[in-house]
Length: 253
Ligand SMILES: O=C(O)[C@H](O)[C@@H](O)[C@H](O)[C@H](O)COP(=O)(O)O
Picture (tube, rainbow, N blue to C red):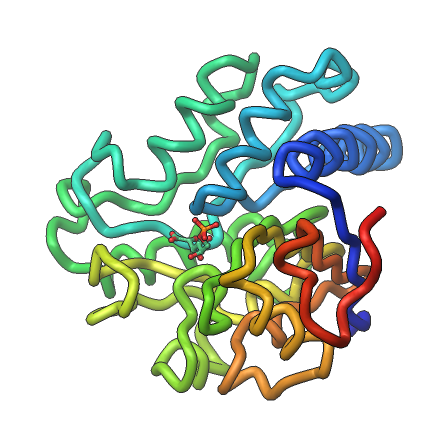
């Protein structure tokens, strides 16, 4: 697993633009090498801002969006189209504005979908989707996995000392009684996240500074799940100055 690298931007706006540019580069290079690319999307404000920046950058069309496989790192288990779903956010901010191949967009099931109100069945089905897409093993090697970070160090819907952070076998789990509403979610596990070539943790604001500093000190993943989100090749903590304000963080770019 790669070590965490900290990249500090002066503002959330600069961060979003810089991550969008980095995504265009990494995805287009993956396509030059293999003819396709894969991207794991995240919820949250910072992640949502990056998707909007990606939509609006002129460089976006350097990527063949019809040859990108889109997955989610987690999802709120709500009815399809609910504004609180990460899928709804991603479609509004990005996917509905790009020539994506609908057959290559893999949302996690909604609570009014084929599995009804059973998040365990929905999680198991997503694990099947990942396994079918994987070359070796049961999870694809995602080119980039985008993640947000919570104040207490959660990432995706993996919270400190939760059943999800202690899950080492399954790739996707249902999450109940989530401290961050809504309470029921579906989430990749850290094992699945660590199948990624690159993991980019995106966060802004002073409220995240403790989590950033803890991760830079290699905190235990049970206590700070985001610290366990590592890529095979690179792990980037891409933050703004406010989130990097505590010791163990680097200077702004
Ligand atoms: O579905 C979700 O809620 C997320 O995926 C979650 O992990 C989010 O990314 C963080 O809580 C950060 O959210 P903010 O960037 O809005 O603080």
